[in-house]
Amino acid sequence: MLLSFYLKPEACITHIDCTTKNGVIEHLVNHLTTLEPSLHREEILAEVLEREAQYPTYIGFNCAIPHAQISSLTQTYVVAASCKKRIPFTEQGEKVSLVVLIIGPKTHSSLHLRLLSSVARILHKEERRTALEEAKTSKEFYNIFCSIGE
Image (cartoon, rainbow, N blue to C red; front, side, top):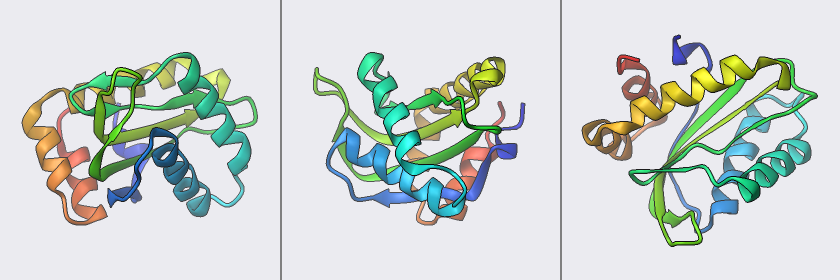
């Protein structure tokens, strides 16, 4: 599966300046709904935050993949970001510097799981994470993310 089909250069953000888990999730949802004005910001934010409260999406290595499947959606969206400073993301105090938001329709569970797996594989290696953290522009971030073999 090509992640580049779902992640677009304009959906990548570098060095966002947030201080909380909910703040970074809200920032990503705001960015997505600015790119896709037909999406319902409040619904997406509520669904992602509810999913996060039930099952935290911290995957280790200073990375998190908040995600949700939402009935009203008809397609899948991915937004990715590096953080200016590491953000506390778990009750145990683990922090994140890379966050990838995935949302999609409830009817596309298989695709949703494949995207989660693909992103987790990309973020697994330290040199990949370092390159993403150091990317200066959204385009550079996108090129690094999508040039990595999946």
